[in-house]
Length: 367
Image 1 (cartoon, rainbow, N blue to C red):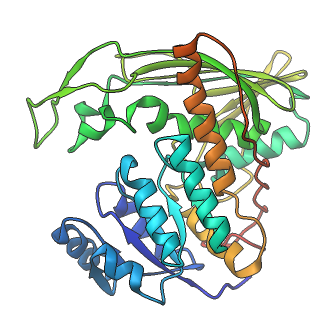
Image 2: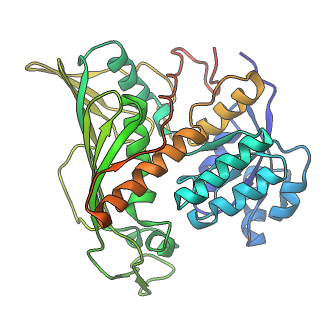
């Protein structure tokens, strides 16, 4: 179904912005018309690289009456500030993950948008890719029976090894819980529905980190946040998941995500990617399942395009603000549970996002 493209402006032209710019130009629901950054040269470089009509300041971008969606790709601790300014300017806003660095700020974004009649969206949108959509179909079609549990693991030794500007990963708003947790928690919600109760434990195993990437090789970073976290999630529909995210592990041989059902086990691909492989174990038989949906390649920006389609049609968007706030609530609850030594009953919830249709044409989200 053809969509009247929604004019998009990007705030934040750092490392992640390149793939968003590339994909925005092939998703038919989006028309990327402007980009902004605190460092003007970054915005100008992105505009030149991707033939974006305008490189400007954030204030100029927010004042542009043509722009309907602001894509906020700033560092996490700036997400609330940029999102609230965009909403105040009458723009719909889509944040890179997480929605905000605290529940309080996340709630402000959701409340402000509702008052203004604006849509809120948030990464990750990887759950909309071929891999996890195939897993969703297998669960919905009953391949593994009723889900009763899941495990999810992200392990690495820290982003200072490879990222050119890794400091923010160890500042408030960073750490594996808010940085990598959204991929895993969002995928689990897409597959198993919202969470009702959380407990967990967290630790900061190393008080300082030394950058070994360029151009900041040798700089020492003070660690402000937990870098190893384990959570137990009880789902509203039943089932319990164990989730571990860490920047403290050199290597491991663990699955990314597995979902355990009454009839079998589902192996879910890396939720930080869009493709496969997808595998199922049914009794003693193990098989790889062909992907049932499109968007197997790196398709960051799908959630923004889906939001644009929702804006035009009035249907709910999939990577929406209510789910993003619920994901934030789950992740904060893991840290709260560790600090307070108890289970946390969640006050938030969300709807399980609708599956994507099969057989979509490249660049489209609706039949």
